[in-house]
Length: 310
Image (cartoon, rainbow, N blue to C red; front, side, top):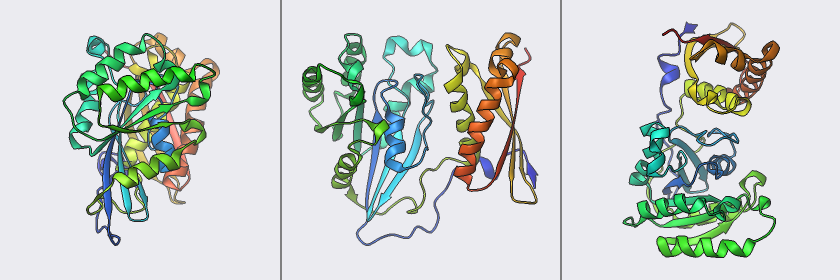
């Protein structure tokens, strides 16, 4: 069966016929914080699956990603959002990216505010800190403050007390503070316990085995995009545009996916492909492995890099 991925593959995962447990509890949690604080890594670790893209570059998460954690009678829906951008930096990113974090608060029952522990001690972090607290000022949503990447903090741990106090004074709805390293899976049970204790008695929204509402095609686009982010530098990965041109289930059950990736100039084309195809080959290899795991079937991924016509 051949298609361009414009129909079923583009549809989000809509839950049907959900089996409710005895005494179901539900909590919608907005994950917010500065860019590169490790929000997506934390969500992926909690879910046990990479549902939100991770790279070392800021603003890897470009829009809200929904992830679902279900254990026992509890269902926690995490809304992983792009890094918070102070007003004076909005012009550098698109409007959706700049406002997505705050729109998620409109549907949240709880806020998890994630900070990079080391960076939070730096003077330049105060701009984003003050901006976050100003936006939260008139809200009344219970919150948990998380200092992430504690493994990178070699000294001056006591300095975090001042940061903690400023946040708790600026947003008194912060009830608990957790110090962890999401990358190493540290303190995940503590975060889960806080979420379960905060969950509200009401029906689940998703089936117990569902991890995300992301469509199959969105999984593909995210997997490819993240692999480019890991390998390209400066502004180039942010400029790439993707187009799905083929979605074919072969006779042996293998899924063949064909994608075009567009750059703006021929000079970028050479960088994206890499010397002797090194970059594009690595992207295909790693994205294929990830997608085979997600879809639980063999995947053949083909990517063509093209220069966008003026």
